[in-house]
Image (cartoon, rainbow, N blue to C red; front, side, top):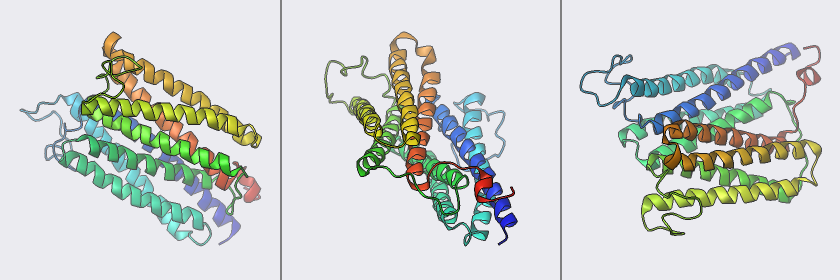
Length: 320
């Protein structure tokens, strides 16, 4: 493969991976909107909706409004768009697998997760949006998004990238933070789909108990516990990063600010149930969207430790 061909292939893969990443983020946010508006079952069948590709106006007898059905329909449409973007990405990855082996491997993993995501979407409908199916659906979506972040990073690095050297303790703590953050988000989906967002009232206890006996309340408190662990790990990560390279310190500082923002959003969302319930749905979606961005930043920092910092395209493809 000539240098010019390599350059063009990389540019195409970079554009497609960026598009897939951005639209997948939108897909996750729209999915959260579907959930908080309780519209997950507004299309009772799959892949069609009321047996139609265009179910508007909603057939007579439906308990859902046109708006609710439209949310679910748009969610499925965006998922289809992601699939259409991934097809040429897969083609390029397979075609250039010898020149860009890392990109090929991650693309294959991404496609496996995409296929799993489609199946999980069907499962959530078949099981009437039961909480565990919603949580698995979100979890798989986050893993899929992570692979797209890595694909995007690969196309802004040399073909054989060198990671930023960090201490073993920092890398382990970074992985631990990202894993706990992931679990916190999954538990948040369980809370939302179990209608447990406002069951506990105040911040420091649940109906006057540290550990309630009601299952939905337990889910809520577990989400809080995981959020607390996430915050503590973020603080520890900040302290640990002081001995790392400036690129890593800057990235962790950005991560810390986002954790603070997520904590504030969580508190505002919690108290919205009692004081401003008309804003709960918007706040809940914003909370999930911000958490998703936080997860992307964490994955990006991990990526830097394996792939190194971003470089200019011309540095590894001279003349372009």
